[in-house]
Image (cartoon, rainbow, N blue to C red):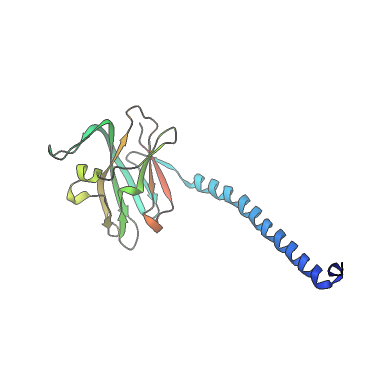
Length: 183
């Protein structure tokens, strides 16, 4: 076979082998870096308690207290009931940024001791917050705190609850903080 005696054929073979070896080497390096990045992120996250402030991104978040009820809503015509329980988390969020920032109930979630995650009720804001302390897509100006309630529907026999708070919504999210709810 004359093709194996030509120099350009061997040059192409060597280039292909080097390219394959180089590409596989990059994947190995990325895989070995990724777990250490996750470990360092986990070490940074500290758990606060009710009444303690924690900083997440450009927000300072404090859980002021929690309540459990089977019914939410003070107006007798605007109430919601459950066979499980509603967990109402009273939070304060302060904007530490130089610009206004948006806070929303979707920044919060409950995690139990088994790792199950509970999202807030999408309509919970209507039942437990007045117009002054709505938490649905609410703008907060710099150095101002907003107080409101976030409602979760959870099983009655749940334990080990922690509130996980994201640093924002959309592209401003990325960091998170955890607050032990003592339940």
